[in-house]
Length: 222
Ligand SMILES: *[C@@H]1O[C@H](CO)[C@@H](O)[C@H](O)[C@H]1NC(C)=O
Ligand SMILES: *[C@@H]1O[C@H](CO)[C@@H](O)[C@H](O)[C@H]1NC(C)=O
Ligand SMILES: *[C@@H]1O[C@H](CO)[C@@H](O)[C@H](O)[C@H]1NC(C)=O
Image (cartoon, rainbow, N blue to C red; front, side, top):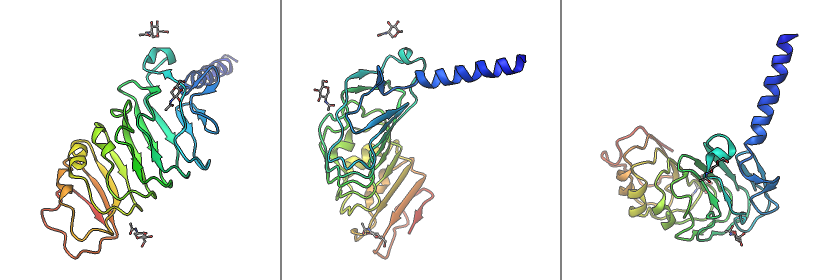
């Protein structure tokens, strides 16, 4: 009997704990505009035929003690829409603690450009950026501000060049890079900026030679 009571108490604690962790809702209202919904640490907007990023209700989540414990990871599920551009300061109504990691899922949209200040206010939080299946031809200048980007996915974008300044900026933090080099005629020398990379997937290579000093990490080329 004692054990059952303990179990019930534990279960209640866990359920309340999860309820308390509804980071993106305030008074039961999702901070992202409809038709997006919020669930714990996720903003759910995938497959909703959106043409732009939702707007957000200002919410200060920088005071971690308000929610009980630090928000370690925030997920923006915005894949499979028709988003074409991301405007300046699109995420500035949300405030994150420095320790919060933002995972930005933007795959399978129609993104051809990001405003130069698109990542302002979350520039130190974005750790994971998935832009697979979009319409980028170059690395957006907006990436120049990202100070903690670890993983970047760009497959199925018709990239024609890699902005050297962006590669230099991402170099100290980027560990995983996946992209298509179908439009390149030589191995991009900008890869040499990636000092901590441990996984590279470079697809659709048509040029014959990869220079011996073109990389110094373990890599995977298809
Ligand atoms: C930010 O919040 C203000 C005030 O609620 C709102 O008018 C604006 O549209 C929001 N902007 C974004 C980009 O979410
Ligand atoms: C953070 O939240 C706690 C608990 O509600 C409160 O006591 C404290 O004053 C808040 N700090 C700031 C800077 O808002
Ligand atoms: C890369 O190759 C795949 C499969 O062959 C193809 O579907 C895709 O369009 C190619 N991407 C580019 C950017 O050329």
